[in-house]
Image (cartoon, rainbow, N blue to C red; front, top):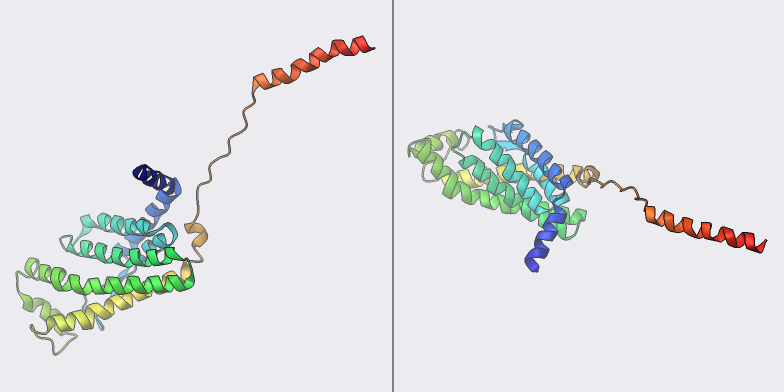
Length: 244
């Protein structure tokens, strides 16, 4: 019974309006992910792009729930796969970090939908995703890029970052890169996404909670009911004549 009830709840929640909103927000997220991005070479290494593709996902998470937010992140990254220039590692990393930002933030907000909980949720999501970004860059992304793109020559990536960090060496690379680049970069980027979310969510609330209303069925006339109402009238006529 529990399994059946679970699928019944999912079926009620996944309506045509739900799927439509997830699809539209995923498309907007992909456009932002693919085209609306820039870097800040005077602050961070040039290969760290500032982009706001988590914005539609967090809007989906706040209005439809954490599952919808995660779906938007996954869909936008899957669409980006054919255009990948990082052998899919960049997209997979962005997918993980996006989910770790959107899902915790959405869960906190869904507990109690207030401005305070929205701020707490966005702060929690930013913190979780930033911490995960440090770990992923240290143990996955950077080692992969060095081996795959630079043939194991670690000095290439060191020289790319040494433009900003003059005292960086091969031995101190991770300290500079993780705590002077990755940490502030993700706090800044996700902080901006969180700020925009906080400012626009209530204004877009009516659109995000739009539902397709089912058409009302016209009442069907019952011929037998008409027949039953007519019969007594015909039977009363002879009685009226007898009384007269």
